[in-house]
Structure formats: C-alpha cells, structure tokens
Length: 153
Image: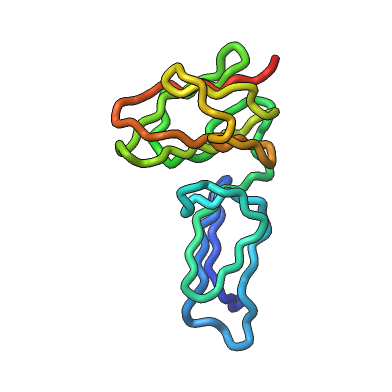
C-alpha cells in the first residue's frame, strides 16, 4: 500500500487520472511523463508532462508505442467513420455539430503533402505536423464529409 496524491489508471494507450482533493500529508503533486494527446482539450494538443494538483482531471492518449509506419486517426473532436488507407492516403468521413470546429489528430509517417476536406484543399495554416502526428482543423458538418490526408510515396 502506498498513499498518493492522485488516482491514475492506464488502459491500453489511454490514461485516466485525477488529483485527489484529500492529499496525503507532504505528498507532492503527481507528474505524469508523456508525450500525450490531451483528450480533454478541444484542440488535441501534444503535452510532454501533466501535473495533477488536487481537483485536476485528465484523459490522455499515450504517444509512445503508436505505430507511425501506417497513418491512422488517433483522436478526434468530431465523428470519424469509414477510416481506410489507400494509395498513399488516409481517407475517412467526418461529421459533427454544425458551426463548430473539427480537430483530428492523425499518426503519420511523415508530414502530409496535402489535406482535402469535402474534395477541397485545406489551407496549410489549418494543419500542422508535430511529434509524428498531424493535427487537422476544419469546420464541422452535420452531414459526413470526406477527408483525405495525402502522403508522398
């Protein structure tokens, strides 16, 4: 038995954590080492470390161990369906609440060469590449819209 200032549960690539309000005396806040995708943040940022002071809750996706030889969706602030990899591209359909922003974090072997949403190119300023992942931002649509992330062959 060891008293701690937080509850931390890891299940596969996910970490659920909470800083306890009733800390053990002289217990330092727990610091989780990443990198992680912060799933409670709508922008799906990559964070290196997460500190759990009393009352803080976290839902994280571990990045170490994520296969990057084949692109795949890691996390999304929209509904992703029909995900498939074909001819040097990751394709999927995205839908969500109209008038909101979709954010999708994709494991990627390299930076994308192009991103298309609804058949139209997504401006380079609407996506970035960091830590072996690409983050795409585009307007949500109630109806599923095709998304294509192209990579050089």
